[in-house]
Amino acid sequence: MSEQEFLGKNVLITGANSGIGYAQAKGFLKHGANVFAIDIKDDNLLNLQKNYGEFLQYQIADVADKQAVDRAVEQFGAIDILLNTAGILDGYAKTLDTSEALWDRIINTNLKGTYLVTNAVLPQMLARKKGCIINMTSIAGLVAGGGGAAYTASKHAIIGYTKQLDYDYIRDGIRANAIAPGAIQTPMNQADFTGDGEMAKWVANETPAGRWAKPEEVADLTLFIASDKADYIHGTVIPIDGGWLMK
Image (cartoon, rainbow, N blue to C red; front, top):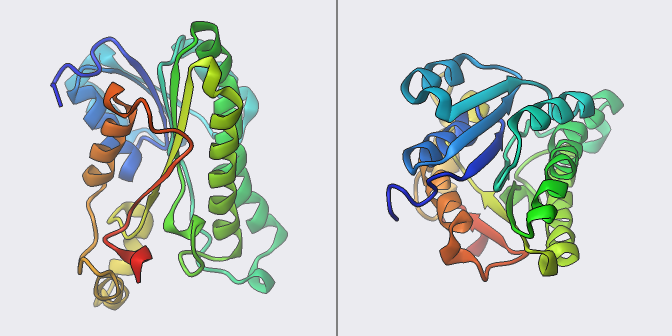
């Protein structure tokens, strides 16, 4: 892929301050894009901005807050590529251990946030008859065991939303797909590596590839899906899971 593959393209990334979103931001900046980021924190983005200057802009905002999302998108302007990456875990809570407050927090961030940001950006894309949207789901969106009741429900719903989104607007120049990561070593999963790291070792052992992936590997996949070379890929969920789903 050319270093200038995305030269002049405007990419909006949610959850870009850490983990997969941060790796995506770095990847698109490296390949010539202008990156607009939304996150509830900005410590890493601030440091990244020192290297890329005006090519990176960001807003501190909660993706579940419609007014904050609308203000951010209005400031950023036209978006060519949207990456709905923001998401939070639920601690593997079973349904009887899931309070209504926890359920709402997970659904509002993971699912409603994807819906709100998409609806804020989509009219601009439709006006130009071109746009690429990549939603972040998970292997928990395809099988049980990757999260608790709320997280699994949210990630399954994102897959359905992505397929319907693409189906509804494919003839209008919109291309929507989803990525389903497995074990990715990010701050969100840091608890698995604490202490003697037995949980992280167990996950690696249960993964056919025998390891956790780096967030940069998901970012590389994102770059391909967003490129013109993937223009015929529509409404698809692409796992990057070290073979977890083939078991």
